[in-house]
Image 1 (cartoon, rainbow, N blue to C red):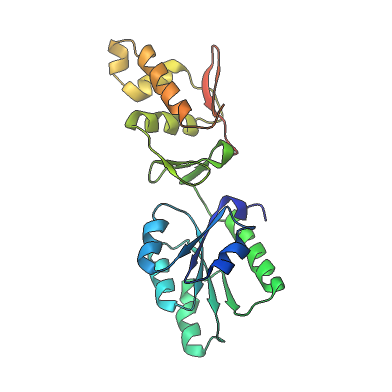
Image 2: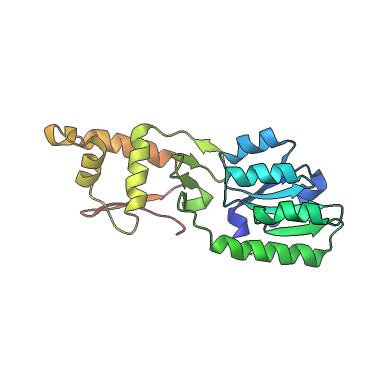
Length: 221
């Protein structure tokens, strides 16, 4: 289940024992007490959600994001009325509590395969599990903590990721960042300061350079 290890799990209305159980499968597991806290967290994360006996919240999550991976846990056998409400939500699973190990492993394997078919174009995985979110223009470290970037640092990392399969010359980078200004004055010194500043915020050797060719970003992709 290699894909799960790159993703966060949110447990809504669950206990600490559930958190401990699932930590071995996911990158990290967070307990959420209410829907308001969930949505605040969800805006910064791309998690998988395990929801406990709350159809209304499942509806709200699905309305917020059509691609969320949601599994519903219930202490009771689902009745016809609830089933009719849950079907349109396209859940990734329904598990009755108490569950057995086999059911959970089947569920996790299914989610792991489902992750392969989801387009995470907004997320780019860097060295050491660092992430760059194109949509929100946010850099996260390996613990999913936000690393603040300046506007020009964002420009630079966007360009390097866009052309990640090739080296980009310093002249091209300078023009892309400072545009016409780079044609009127030498931006080489400013570029080196910008590059060094971004490098300090990234894992070692994330941005590599080749004399005469330029700069390229290393990643896990």
